[in-house]
Length: 447
Image (cartoon, rainbow, N blue to C red; front, side, top):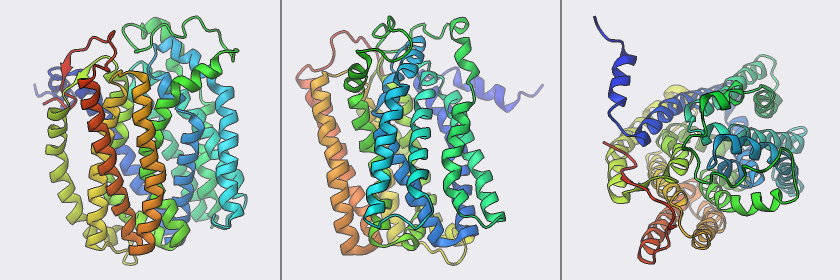
């Protein structure tokens, strides 16, 4: 009797380590995310044209950056605890997250509006604020699933936000209402917020607390609701996660905001169309923080061997993307969209460097080094992402045009990766690893 492909796959996975199982599962699901993202970009570009596609790209990136600021790093801090503690932390953090979302959402959208930099869309500031509030709360709501190492379940839930958004794109095209492209995202996250997650109700019977979480016991005595000390504890403990999150996401989205402000929505639409293909390389960069930070809390990783294994897969894949993009772009998006080889090459290189940086920074953040040293490193890392990346993007875009954006990002990524590698060596030489962590040596990308 022939075995099904699922049975064969299960047998293969039984022989590999925990890290690779999680990465393989989430990576497979991330492919679905990429396909849906590709379909979303394709439909918007085809249905509404370059300019509207550029406006949507700006709105999408602005919302992600502002909601990351508004999250205060709390959702990643939650994922480092036992499941039952992480649920309490989520409930206690809701008032803080709502307040921060309103502040960052309003200021982040109103200031560009006041400077006449936002696209001319009705109620744009209100839509951005709604997007920031709902996305911020949603990220924290699914964090307990990641605390229980249920990475696939959390990503499946996230997947539905894109499915819902696809419906708004089609409705916007049918009724010639581009406003639905912008209200569709916050409404999609609101629907997921309102839907109860059955997994939460099964926490006691499933035994999810067993052996999970690197900060077990820190919040086990806290009651539901906001108490006097939770705010300062949350902010202080989540700060390093906020810096790591911003350092990563600013690299992904600052170039789009800079292009919109300097070159306009049409050029941004063309740039984002090419990025739709080259961003396939970046799949892993979004997975590593979600998977490796919780796992690295209980394991020690061989950096050089793991990095070599990662590059062994990525470099040939990047070459395929480089030569396929100029052919596939006009085929899917139409003859109005072209991919110059030089711009495509710059985007491929910056995407490769982003994956390497995400890998290194995720391992460093989960490695349990001395907290003061970690904050110092991440402050420098954040400075490179925020000040360095914004400054270089503006400078290079004004000097070289749109190709200046990926070149600026690549330069910053090289500096940031060098900083993290230095931090690894410095912490090892100066015995800055936490003494209470006992971890076995494993490869992050196991063969």
